[in-house]
Image (cartoon, rainbow, N blue to C red; front, side, top):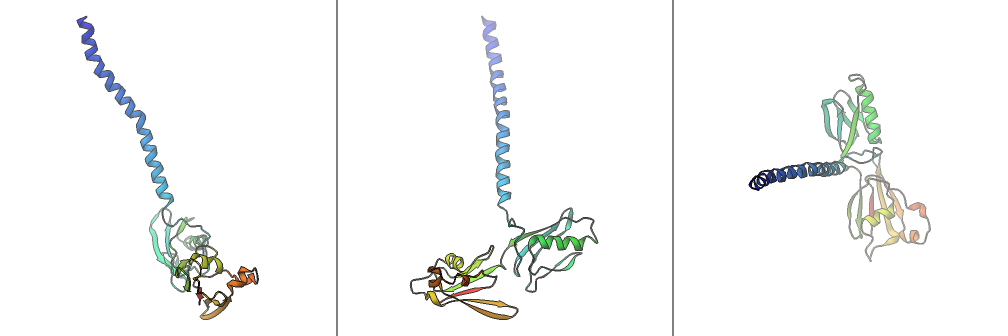
Length: 211
């Protein structure tokens, strides 16, 4: 009887420890999996994840890198003339180009120095693609033009017009090649389904004036 009590007192603590270790080993992979998911989510929300079809504009900030070339990584701001500079590639004209097209243009220039270069161009800040809505709207200001937006949509972004706005006297100001153009816009006609062609797509730098 005394021997049985001795074995129970000796072996029971060892049994408890073994069970505790087994429980820890089973729960640890779940903790690792949760952390991995969280890190993946954070990466998916990082800057520079816009479509490669995005058209670059002066004022945009780009991150350019070449795979396996640590010295070839730069942040550049697109100047007013659209010409950026990058090591080895020299001057590159980005006017009217998308991110993907800039990647191809840089790759072609770097081929002279690097065999089959893999170039990545990411948008860090789209400060060049701006439109402006001023006058009698509820939220006047500047708005990022990161997709195709027409006049009606821009007015909606600005919170719509105030009660005293002159709906039939709206104008869109556009500067191209140093020359300014003026487009007239009658919101009352749009509401009645008339002259829908005046609801033009906006371009970077356009200003909508609501009197």
